[in-house]
Image 1: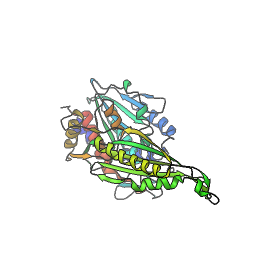
Image 2: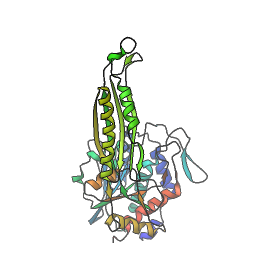
Image 3: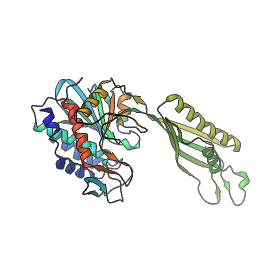
Image 4: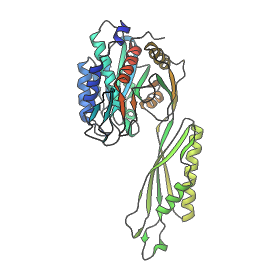
Length: 371
């Protein structure tokens, strides 16, 4: 029966659900409408649903009492795009009209969850574990939602995050630590046309610091970036302060520590050279995780992938998901692809056949024999 169920994914229904979700604007910070929509959808499919104080949704589908798993997705989309107009091509690929992102990240994952629930509802004789579907807000801005989730309310022993790109059949088993940087340089304001000598130009100080920093691809496991540079008041005022925003990531904590030290050192040297001051703020957004091949979530995902005729492709990711949070909280998770390509870009697209495959993998996980 489990095999029949896996083969029963309704391609058109899955696509229709995905397009319905894409039609609901939900950039980060504006998830109210889609949150209400999803609350109703999960409830209609037999789940006990609750939403927390920030809008995260937890929908529990009761199953075998001796086994509970987590399935994680997020409801927000990257950036500020609204009015997304998807186009389903004759080649079976869903794109946009080119003016916005698509939102397959992560509405393709949510659509897959809803299809799985529909099939389980229609086949009540199929044995499945209790499933805790967690759909977070604010994922795209640094796991804002999941980091405020009360994991004490969850009972899952392990989980699966449907929120990655990559080849169908891949398992993201390793993800980096990511830190956000807020660097503030304080110089001294002065009239730039009358007495610039009295000023300390914070823009100049910051520019020298950035020029001295190692940035970009540092090594195989480490990257760093300065993304925004803001400050100053007017053309004729020596700028007294500048704020830089950046990030650094690494799969190796020692390498990340060295990178942060090099960036901090470049800032301090530049500030000292000109008599300015600098505040180097660091916020850890998520922590690295690495799941071994013999760990339960990896084994179950691999067995499911093979059962639908795909090869298992171990994947080391340069990005993070809510899985980083859950792993840090003691719920081991691996991340699985939904078929999304070029996420966060106007070229974002997804093949309907890949969405079907992702759904079949999830069905195989929840109906398979855990080994």
